Image 1 (tube, rainbow, N blue to C red):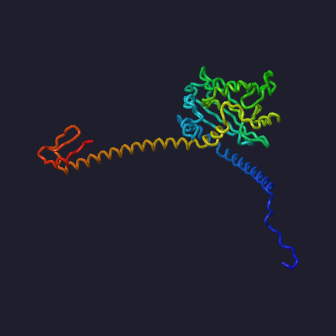
Image 2 (image 1 turned 120 degrees about the vertical axis):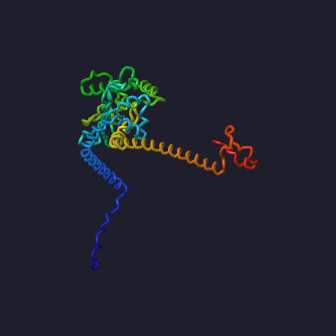
Image 3 (image 1 turned 60 degrees about the horizontal axis):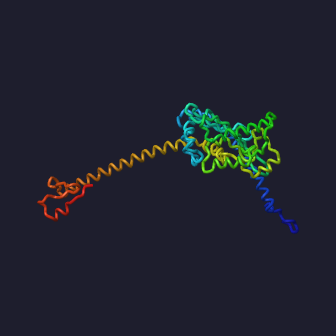
Length: 345
């Protein structure tokens, strides 16, 4: 470097102010999210035919899905004893992601043995979920309530799932201009058109008792109103502001978490859960057999040792049995008698 020339430029970028760094991290997080969505799109395309083949095979295995659901950690906390008979009739479980632009949308479909299911008439219950983003507020899943055709006097929700579905249907028809303009209440969760007293009544009915798993099919979600779906419908700005911190009035709490558990854990890992249960049962059975065999061997070894001791001590026909205690004959001296006393177990 010649004298008087300027120094070489520093190749290390200048440090950012904290506010700039935070902004850059936020932008980077969005890039991570986009990359994850691209990976999910590829995974869906690659595995779709595999799941189709698996669905056909699992439907031929009696009790496959009830076994999988029972083996899933913590899933039983969502199932009441009254739900169990219907769970035993599940013949299929399918998860599909039909929206190529938003792979976080999905559909969960439960199939039941209609002849054996004593609770409702439906052979298939299908629940749809959409990933909704409200910029600057929140993002997550929303859904629509599902109508369940309960058999007479078998409704585990005491009429609540029917009420939620009918209110949602009336609200949707009203928005589409097909309704009769009846009661346009604030749409939060499934509490449309309900007064405060009715909401408290619902809470009182559920207090101290776990709601049925099937109330999950009535779950709608946070701040959704009833104008939801796959068409990109949006609520009014006023409703968004009012609903921002509302968790809704759903019969089933945290229905989005259960939906993600089914779609992202139970469905893709079904074979693992099933095989873990089967191999676990076999290991338990083998363990019982080995323990029993060891006990038998111990008993045989004990008998052999006892017989050898008797032979060494010269115990034979001269020993007379008196109840549980055996005593030597009177011909033996006192010292021999004391040594040879045995207690039979």
